[in-house]
Length: 568
Image (cartoon, rainbow, N blue to C red; front, side, top):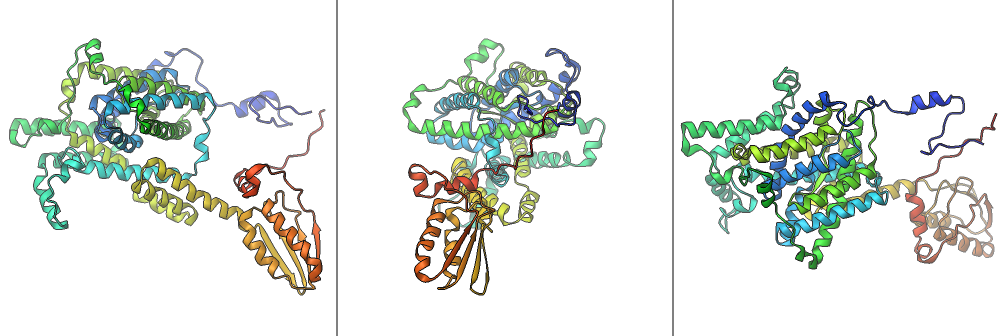
């Protein structure tokens, strides 16, 4: 009798155990401790730090949170999640994909301290997800819905950051310059008069740098091409502000248009600057809704990023998803307690880590240490960074999430892909992230049901003889089609019902056939049944409403088993 190994992967009968192990096991680095690949991990951590620094600040800016909250999350993502994660190359920190939830949640809960309570609770839920083995939840979401979610996040980033790129503090700040009765042209004229030219020039230059850094020409340059584009964009903003101060101080950016961080000179001083959760918010029912939304979306984004990072790993290692969820849960609990933004695994920093030649999770841990050092020793330099440069980084990120080529590629794949994608984008823009994802998932399920019911029944007629074939699983969604076929059978005709290709017959379909057969004799109709599937036991309300048929439609079909090979 053939046995299966612990991972349920069958061995080939004609392969030796050594050959099977060599074929299935991924290549792994040489055994050693955490510091065994320090030569590769140390320079990689520096690259990831340079990528993460502007992103941490920019995401905090877009979220309407204190800028230090972004750095706190980057530090926790490196030191805590990096130490607990089972992924060798994944890097965690504040994510652009959660910006929309953070902005709306802070407004809904009435303050950032109340929002931190939801972050801690979301972390606890993520840890529970990992303990319950929910690491495969990402595979339950159709690709069009996931792409639609990311595209909608990109569009919202662009909408939120455009005013900052022109010198306004936020969209709400820009709207204050509009008269209540202004039409379209008047609105443009009033806003144009309030634009800060220096901020617009800074943002335009930063965007030009970011798009240039995406080109193959810049990537081929020996030294410049290795610098992270967001870092160069931020350095451009600092250089422009310094040049303006030296030549034309009136053209320099105002204090409120640059990064503002508390001055700390020790770990004790840093600790005193952390925001703390307002536990009285536990009395607000909306905190629990925000926590569930955060846990759900952050887990999904983490699992998607983890899968993408595993594909990039040159050693083809696979990270355990449930351990990653537990690590992310601990990280979000710590981040919430220290006043940080919610954390996920992020593909931008992870891909930079891979490209920089990292080999172990030490790179992620060291990048967290470098972020901590920057907060302690570089705060004075960080305050030279223009907010418009950070806005440009996020505008570029939003463009890459919702680029036109993505929409056209989805369009070319047909209505079954494009409509769930478009519905998800529109629903998120019109409502919020969680409701939009659920609406997109419902629209995708309609196409799944339609594709599974298409061709479930067919009927061939020759004179007074009719052959009704049940071609596959038949659910209650096919009842109208069945009634139409049965209506074609006239008095005195003969009907053959062939169920040889059907494995499941929904109760509603079975009752429709039995009702027809019960009255067939009095109409002179001869009915012959061939290879009909047995009745499946239904219990409770599920059978009454035909939910068993829906479950059968959505259940993956088992592959036919190969004939057992006798032991030799």
